[in-house]
Length: 287
Image (cartoon, rainbow, N blue to C red; front, side, top):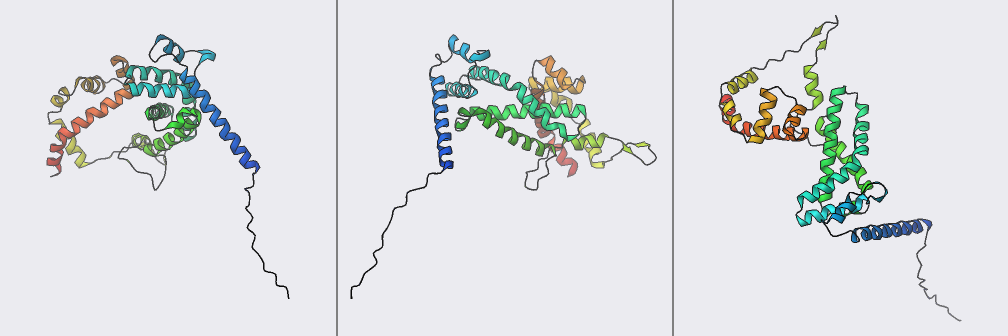
């Protein structure tokens, strides 16, 4: 009887090429082309720092360079240690982003039902936070995708900045978010508002804190004026203008020729120095 043995046959299965693979290949091809075009535009720029170079960087109208190319120029300035050149390129970038960034900051805060003054302050702070994060990203040479698709990176940066900003201001309720010691604006504002009673009379909230009163008295009796006068000049001028002359942050910024954010940063620096100097008195008070 003839016996037939089954012989296993191994057939090499070729991968199935789908429309999705085809679309992905097209996207990869477009990305490669985009990289080549941007790289070529950067390579043909005039010598860095020359008159022709700055003319190309600051060109108006249809001759503007893509933002991705400007990012590479920023990083070139950073590598060369050219701070003035870096700031000059940043001015070009933020001038082009101003309208869209300003609209974004206003639009994302419109739904929060804030008063006019508070919303304006929050818009300015959010706008400034976004600019600061963009500057850090552009100076970080490891974040290469900014050199390939600026607007895509900007969109993600806005989301990150908005969430971090709202968490800091106390508007973002998250159990996992790290809480700061900063008092949010909405809580500070609620302390200043009068309470509407049932008979429609307004009742001012009087919060008495014995420890706080002692702390204030200790500060008044300390050498605070001498400590303020011993501050560095740039910090001392801000403190004196705001707390002794009653100037606003905007007036102080205009008088000193600096930005509102710089005024706030210098105030924070002055408070930090004064807090460290007054710490021994606070320890004695609670001791």
